Length: 123
Image (cartoon, rainbow, N blue to C red; front, top):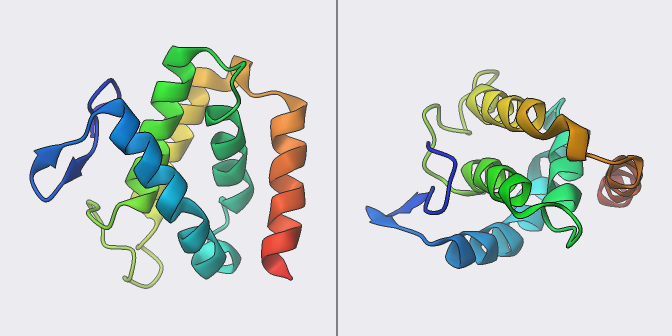
């Protein structure tokens, strides 16, 4: 997956940045609620979400994070998510790379919002 303006593929067609944002917003919470308890990187995933959709986050940072979140949301992965143990390793790797690239833009309020959301999802 390439991070940039058109990054995700859906049925062989490229999505533009706005379509990718809509796809992430639409599918993100549904998938998080389903898998949050089984993925050790749930807090980082939610932190990336809050940073990506924070209007004060620079556009290039938002693009990188939305690309990583789209990789998590979309069903087409290098390693299918339904595989036990290995299913989310590629998602974690893509997310970790994206977070490393934009670490200076992740603020404490993004992490706090992520922790609060994780508590709500766990209930």
